[in-house]
Amino acid sequence: MQYQTTDDLELLLAVLPPYIIDALRKEDKFDRLLEVVLDLGRRPEARYVGREIDLSEHEVTSAELEYLTGRIGDFGDDNRAGIERTLHRISAIRNRKGRVVGLTCRVGRAVYGTLEIMQDIIEEGKSVLLLGRPGVGKTTVLREAARVLGNSKRVVIVDTSNEIGGDGDIPHPAIGRARRMQVATPALQHEVMIEAVENHMPQVIVIDEIGRELEAEAARTIAERGVQLIGTAHGNSLDNLMMNPTLADLIGGIQSVTLSDEEARRRGTQKSILERKAPPTFEVIVEIQDRDHFAVHHDVMKAVDMLLRGRQIPPELRFRDADGQIRIENAPPPAPAPQARAAHADHAERPLPVAHPSPVFEARAPAAALQPVRTLRAYPYGVSQSRMQQAARRLQVPVLTTTELDDADVVLTLKNYYRKRPQRIAEAERRGVPIYVLRANSPLQIESCLAEIFGVERREQASPDDEAEAETRAAINEILAGRRGSVELAPQGPVVRRMQHEMAREANLLSRSHGKDPRRGVRIFHNNG
Image (cartoon, rainbow, N blue to C red):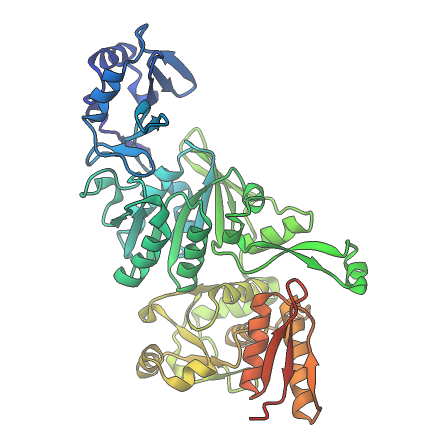
């Protein structure tokens, strides 16, 4: 597909002083024009791709700045304005008294076809964060993603500066069927993000320039509700994001952890190390180097963990060659492992097996209810999507999470949710969708459930979460066997502690957290009430 560009450039030229319009027409390089800069007392300047030129010997006056500002929309709290139903952006520089002393008139273009290089990633339903230097085209790709996804999903754009959908109440046609919510002031962006989810039931939220801590927290909240996020942030690479204390939460956050002497010797590291605090908000990160060159981190969780250990997983490189063909280098291996390939090949010929009740989970529907599928579409209700994807990656089996019960092959939920029979669970039972009931929202139990569904063996090597669950299970059994007092568990992060509290509650025992991070742990003891 060739790029198709619309820029409504005549509407931008119409607000500029006449002598500047004449100079731009004389230059006649409109397809390479990036922006026009007017600063009080300086020569007007045009910035093109790769060069800058003066447009006149004449210095810009206050009257000329007022002439331009009087022909555009009002400036917001972010000192940005636009031209109605266009993508052009006019940004102001003010003096200490609030008077405009400089203007940057940036050309806004809708470029159709820019998403093709990564369209398969967007359509998988994963949350994707776009990184890149200012001006590299992040917003252009974001706008195209909203248009493409809007053809098949409910998409809502949170448009803080009207850069995605253009100025005015009627959005630019470049966003297609996507809906657009404007933001009164940038400080309220996080509130509008939450409002979009609560009021308009989107399947996809598109947000430009996540830059504040409250916005990062709102993004995490949205992702936990099962809504796909497509967003941008300033930063050239994943390494930059990790070093940004405000935005590091988007990739799980970084914390300092003190290891025991024995563990430090086993790992061959210092006692104080950096670790990821939680699952990342965004599952995929795309570094935009230029319009035709992207670097893709398909597994953000693993990439961050490896970087913190001093190693780096090379990203997948995608680029468009001289013939317009998309090329991929360093692509990850296909999902099915050799040991699971036979089982995977059978999926087209037989239904996936439904597990029998076990200490880990129970099936709540007959085996005949599950239709033959190659990729399992799972509807998690109260079960962590990120842990499910992590378990699928460890088993190397194809699993997609879905937010629509109509699309689901199975439902995974927790025992406390299943007992209450919420509407979604009751609806799944009515439709005959197999329901798997897990005792705890832990990686071990989710992985065991998926392994049984696909008929593959779990890997023997235990993860740190598996070890924590085994320790918790042993403590519970010890107390149920008659031990007096409490059992103190090893310090863990907040996600693991939550899982340990859930396991204690399921066993009708009490638990309390104690200490301070990173040495905060859980104690389990009898429920004397």
